[in-house]
Length: 313
Image (cartoon, rainbow, N blue to C red; front, top):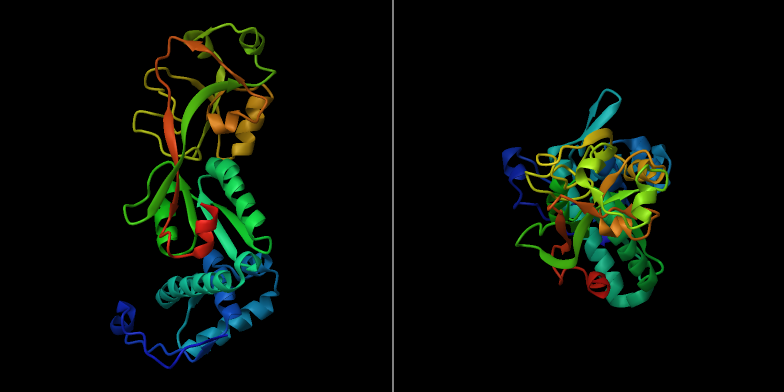
């Protein structure tokens, strides 16, 4: 339980603009956790499933917190809710308090400490580097819980800055104000599965002319799940302005994309970290001088903010 003296928040512009007097006397950590869960989803039922408590208990906890602060944290609109301006303010402060709690536990308990670690990034990066980081965290801190949250690249900076995620994986440095560490240089390859018409040729070591390749279907991401590409490149890094493909399939699911390739329905242009542990055949293509290249970065707010992060990175 956190004890905070009856001090008015005077630094936040909402206080003066809306003439709000926010006082906090005693605030339970669980109430903050419950509030964060609802704030993330803006749905009581979904939040209750995520954290494993009843909707009734969760609603009562939010009501207690609102009564104690004297403000509405959520606006009730019919059957739904939306976070209020005061709720947005508290969300950032609450997450910071929970981070402080985690760091205090780490300082006292070391590897026996338990905390919630949140790693955000594009889906493809999470499937490789996020899993590796989660494994490292769980190995060092067995009682910890790691959430892997798929996010679009334009969401990462704001969520890292607001303490909603602790580590952001991206194909670019997010901000000069953050600490960024390059994990790896990435190259893209054209791949096919065993059922593809070009599989036998490629397996024999034959070079495939790009004109022949372009007669066959490709599957491409409908969202930027593979990270940042340039304006001249498609969402998967291919130069369709120079070598237009037969894009028969598009998908927002990495698993679906991989299934289409493995089953021989389409070729795909993928980063090497997705290729290395799969049953893909990498094509040796002639007549195409372009290759997409990226860097993968680990981004955190500060090396000094959370002690457990330094143990991981």
